[in-house]
Length: 233
Image 1 (tube, one colour):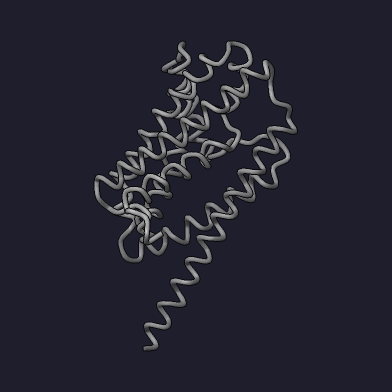
Image 2: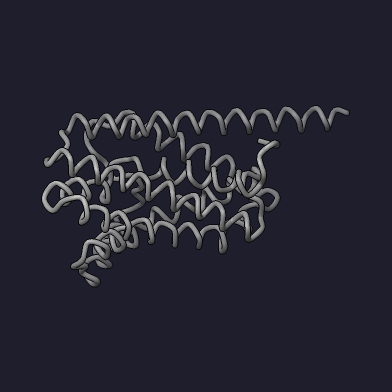
């Protein structure tokens, strides 16, 4: 990691996280699968483009408004622990899923807010359909706040504008690449994925999140060991 230029590392971090966050089967992926099968590749891509734009906005807000606060002192340590538990929870949730679940679910209150946003804006175009569905999913913003704080605290993304923008750009590429690829596959199949296929995608994303959680947990343990060694000296 130390041999990689900070901006390149930030962009790579954004690309990988954007890709992994897009894979779990939720409202956007299901919409692309259904609409792409009915209306073709271009319509599905526009849904993905709208979703990508809103995802990038949430990511930008997270990096510029919240991440710095969560990377200070005890708050930083608490956020590192919370992010480990959160990723572990989501990984187990996806891995053990018996049916398709929403990737980032918060509370019944947030579900009602999501419904009101979609009902009020009532998108008609493919682009706005993707945009509004991510806009209404407040869990996406929460997830990016957690990830942004974690990335900055671990110095995968430096707390400078160039690095933050590189990470956000990486997120845009990773998210967009997944949605374009999914749209293309769906348009070739001319039909919906089976429940079994969707569950396999869900569980594969769970394995990825569990791997990240374990790496993050190992890093926390290593930091604690280093701290004890330095305190002993």
